[in-house]
Image 1 (cartoon, rainbow, N blue to C red):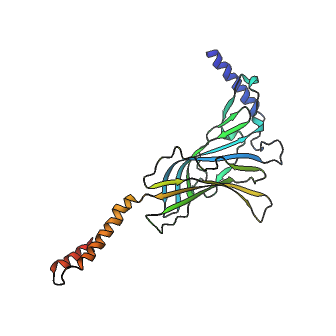
Image 2 (cartoon, helix red, strand yellow):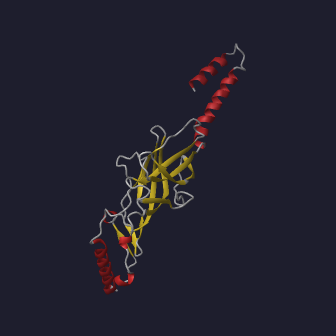
Image 3 (cartoon, rainbow, N blue to C red):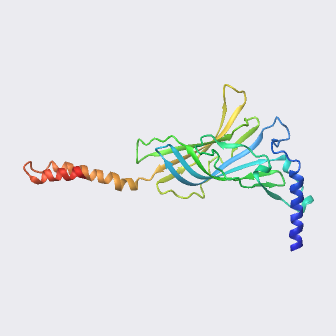
Length: 260
């Protein structure tokens, strides 16, 4: 068993050397430079950490999911002892510079650089988790019976649509199967949409993937602690008008309601 492990380690070491020795991290890994690199993009919403209505901010715990194919990271498994996949740090290979455009984070990119899983056919899977702080226009006109829609816009910072073609991984939107329920907000959905925009300055399109986190405030707390007391106090104020004008209790009731 020990000899088998050493042999497997040797094949993996040799494979890493052969792949990365002359690898250029600045080179977009496509066969033809005029072809766009296909990038599948999705996310998993784990938790809504904070909804800051005052500062118009949404803080979430999210796992991104990026998949693409790197032609420079392909190999024949029979030549390397059956090694089918590798785990490579993201700074050692080319990876798309996808960022959240409406980030309010001090470091702008709040993701943790996990390893990229590379398979022998060149497919690369990158799933960086992160705490995302995004701007969100909130309308609290109907508080506490309000719904909020906070968008998170992701796209390449430097590549246009002719160089990097972003595709929505799941047409239904973000994955919420592992979502941790929030005490103040109900999650209604996380739909996603692919946008292709042409600007006046440039002939090439610019692509982004926008996810909308739709939430509804839980009203039970505010109903019993805000609405019910207000209704009771208002009812008591109206009740005071039914007392006789010469009643001494009418004045004390009015003062009590005022102090309440």
